[in-house]
Length: 282
Ligand SMILES: [Zn+2]
Ligand SMILES: [Zn+2]
Image 1 (cartoon, helix red, strand yellow):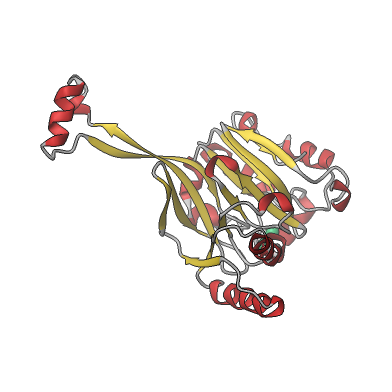
Image 2 (cartoon, protein in one colour):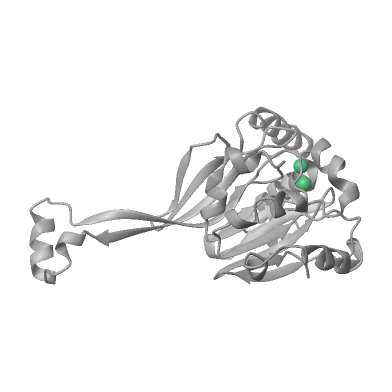
């Protein structure tokens, strides 16, 4: 498989602050991330066979390095008679995605089991009793949203801390609230983005894991980063003291850089941030 990618790039599998992430991310080439702990796929990339089983997919924007695999995914799921999959896409992109799916259905003479769900910043979707998806704003050259996965816990109210199980059960039976809902932001992902994202979406700084594109690294690529609305390493250095995350996974590096060049450039990141930065590289 890796001969399909530039030298030293390709499939990555890592665990960041307890969150396993597996996939490929090379700017302009292919991006997808399997999040097995959340049973969710972030982006399709070109949808290799091992992503087809994911019934929940979050797409940040319509650039085809993130989305080309949609048709393959839909077709393969239909062939395998898998149940309907939900595909979250930015609301402004949803009509085009639906047209594309419709065109493929006509080409193949079948109906896919795909639900294209338009989402906008602020939307909240319960993925499981203990897992909430929040749609974040995006900042890129086409309609884009980000995604935040939060763990949901029911915490006993502080004032009940000393009571025993029977007393709490009795209170609950009487209809009184005994717990409060607590959300722990586990992973934030803004999709492809320019540096404006940091003002638009300060939640990024507070998630346990931040999966952040850093397409460009070298001084000569600053203008390119601005023009295509991508993060440049300088944008991260300028805010190095603001990242509260346990892990910052930097990803979506341009294919113009070798893994060695990437690792060398990232040495510019100062401590204490540097110790928490993980490059999404094989
Ligand atoms: Zn991209
Ligand atoms: Zn893009």
